[in-house]
Length: 93
Figure 1 (cartoon, rainbow, N blue to C red):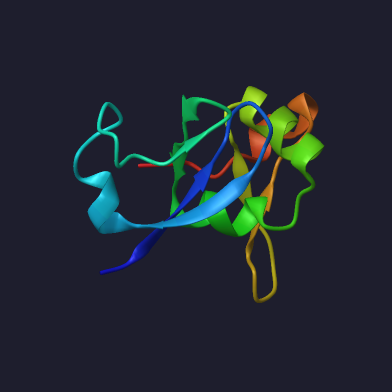
Figure 2 (cartoon, rainbow, N blue to C red; figure 1 turned 135 degrees about the vertical axis):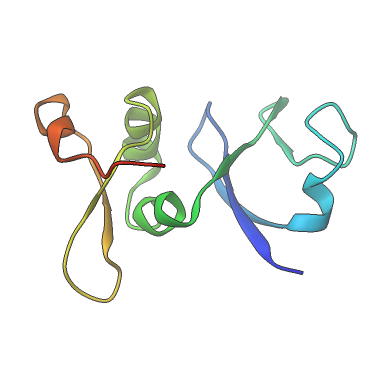
C-alpha cells in the first residue's frame, strides 16, 4: 500500500499518510487531523513541489489553489507562488 502527501490548510504542516487510512473519508476518526481540521490530500506533483517550501510559503501557495509548473532536473515540479505566473500552471487532467 502506498503513501499520500497531506497538508494542513491552517499552519502548512506536511505529513505522509498510508492510503488505507484515507478510504474511510474525512468524517472518519481515522482521517489525519491537524489544528483541529482534516488535512488536505496532495497529488504527486503537488507533494514534490511543496517539499521545497517553508510553512509560510505553503499557506500562501494553498491560497492560490496549489498550482505547480514543470521544471528541469530531478524534482521536476515547482510551486507557483506569484499570481503573475499562474499562466505557467501545469494543466491538470
